[in-house]
Amino acid sequence: MTPNPVVPAQQRATGTVFGLMPVHGYDIAAAVVLRMLDGEDGRGRRARGLQPGEPVPFGVRPVLLTPSTVFGTVLVETIVRTWPANDVSRPWLVVAADVPARPAAAARYRLRALSGRLAGVAYLPYLPALRVVERPEDAFEDKAVCRAAAELRARLEGK
Image 1 (cartoon, helix red, strand yellow):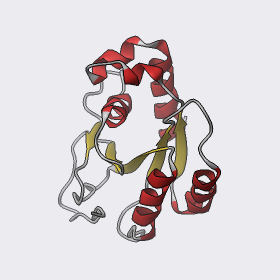
Image 2 (tube, helix red, strand yellow; image 1 turned 45 degrees about the horizontal axis):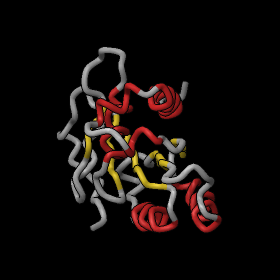
Image 3 (cartoon, rainbow, N blue to C red; image 1 turned 90 degrees about the vertical axis):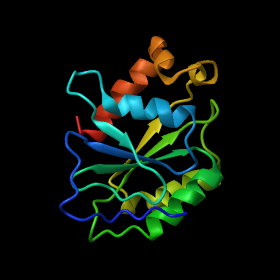
């Protein structure tokens, strides 16, 4: 089901900066990325997970999340092709490495082809800690996860 990102102007998200849309379903990577986008600066909840088909609230930056698989990039392409560019700002894309290697050639090609329709692309490295944690907050005990979170927020916030 393709999300409908159009939302009435009167529906505003207070304090929310990012609206996360995992294109491959909600898993540990989506839960951790949501916490990464929330930030650690004490400004409160800055990110919100959006359900399939839920519109992006006015003033919220849409963020698509996909694994670095060919299938994941095909799902992103489907969403981006139907994205209502006149009504909602272009989405960011976060590509989470599913293995400690580069994405397959077909995935890299598709990401390059889509890059002009996106606000930007941010890559998360392979994070082995995500395979062994029971809860998303446990992942932040790992230094690599904390470093990836800081780099992701800096990339999406243009710093």
